[in-house]
Image 1: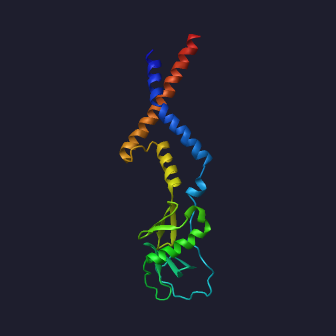
Image 2: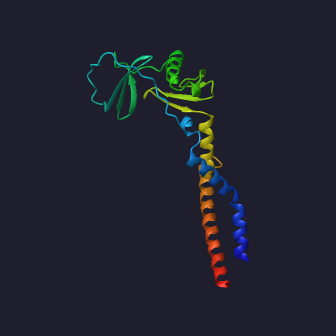
Image 3: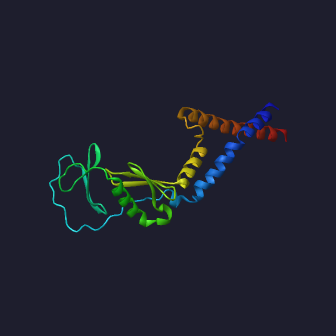
Length: 201
């Protein structure tokens, strides 16, 4: 009786987590809406008209030279990470003004205008679009990262699936351990019940 009662109690406790795991697992398997939510948005580049002649700094480990709607860009990687320098002076290139940021990102949006729409609000290193997509610019890498309501929704489902319910890492880790213990306990009790049933026969 005790085993059956414990099995029933743990089963009732685990109904919602099991339901959450099943639903979110199906979403992760089928991946509906993933293409747009995690689309790789890149700065639009143009053909270079002339080669670049330079004397590389010994600290440079990698160099990228490209052209965008803002002009020429020289990206160099050192032991400290990436940085952008002016190809003409080799001095660190200042971050774009708001108008330059709008121009650069609006040009990038032409690859998928239905998702990104138009810029509604410009922030120091990012913009919010008319479709409620946030685009962040890493100026030193000249790379973009986009996140919309669909991205946040899938991230929320991910948190449900992996028992990240509170947003507090220590508490979520405890929840994860408790969840695993309950699953193992449920399986063990079920095995005991099946064993008793077989013996009774």
